[in-house]
Amino acid sequence: MRKKEAHILIVDDDEDILFSARVWLKKFFTEVSCLSQPKNILKFLSEQQVDAVLLDMNFRKGFENGQDGLYWMQEIKTLEPQLPIILMTAYGEVELAVEALKNGASDFILKPWNNEKLYASVNLAVDISRKNKKLNQWENISIKTNQYQLETQSPAMQEVMDQIARVSATDANVLLLGENGTGKYVLAEHIHELSERKNQPFVHIDLGSLSENLFESELFGYKKGAFTDAHQDYAGKIENAENGTVFLDEIGNLPLHLQTKLLSLIQNRKLSRIGESKERMLDVRFIFATNENLKKAVAENRFRKDLYYRINTVELNIPSLRERIEDISTLADYFLEKYKQKYHKPDLALNENLISELIHYSWPGNIRELDHCIERSVILSNEKNLKLLMPQDEESENTIVNLNIEEMEEILIKKALKKHRGNISLAAEDLGLSRAALYRRMEKFEL
Image 1 (cartoon, rainbow, N blue to C red):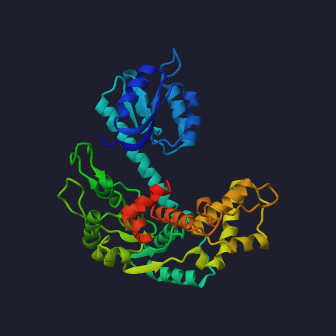
Image 2 (cartoon, one colour):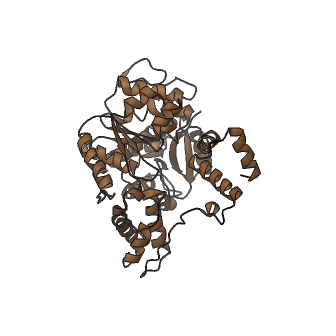
Image 3 (cartoon, rainbow, N blue to C red):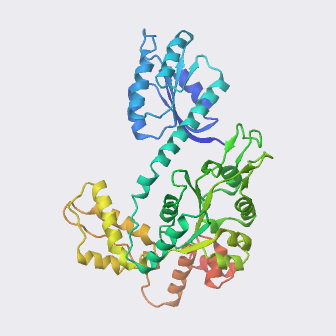
């Protein structure tokens, strides 16, 4: 059975209650934690992300008026106002529990409970918690976007920003191309923020990290009973983006058989949950991104030509950081200010020598690498002087000590494997070798 990704906290001074509730709920949710002492609740919530709390109403012996539960519910609400709380009550406390509902409890469960009722109540609380988080996320979209540095002095990047300004007002599909770390996610969110859909959800889906087995269920959702573990109706990520923007990242990693299903979705703007014949009309705007060469992938039959033409109504090539050196100083200052505040080191500054050092580095990891470099430097510098901890131009295993052919061959093989994330076929192709030849060389160099 596929468990729902959620963290449930159970608070009760009866170890038997904790055990039985945890065993039952662990069947349905990925993480279930227990506390026997209510005094530990606030510390736990400040350190852990929790989706719902199951809270007993009585903790002190001899006191059975439910006031303990009401007190701790208010304490939790002070810390996490939108966190759903389900009260566990005895029969005599029902009237008090109903009063607690008026004060913010999401539900109450009678002891001894019915297992199905317990699951249904907790599951509903988790759904409410997720919706609350989404609403907060959507309401703060403009605040999130302002966290990014979007000013540019680079002619190449200025051209991209001009194109974004023109395309954002439309509903045209946009394909963002660029190396890892060039800011494709930031630009996709910026396009959404400039569009008429800005007050609607922006849903990011990383296709590179999504299991093939979960592709359909996660994107399209499913109907209760569609398969063994489908215990309830589930709206997929795309359906949850209704009226907003869907950002499909790493589109180049999608297997061919799944590309067909995605093409149908984009082309027809209709969605059917797994196990459901009903078609739901879809009103979303699609943005795609990849660091793959899709034209080459099409030529090699690794990517559908019709899907490629469907997703690239507007194709934007994001320049690498080494192609926009005019922005390195501005970006470095932005990251420095960000981490000076975060790590309480207000006196750190970049002088001309440090900026020159930044400009003369190649930044293969682009803006992301610059971000990490500045953060690392701030953390490890003293409070007065910034010590710039630059990455090496090459990883230590890639450094050429001499011009020995075998050493250079080993370096190239390591680079190819790293570039293609261990994919032997792609690495062999990039090196101009057969798979068998690459395997022989890997064995030779003990890779």
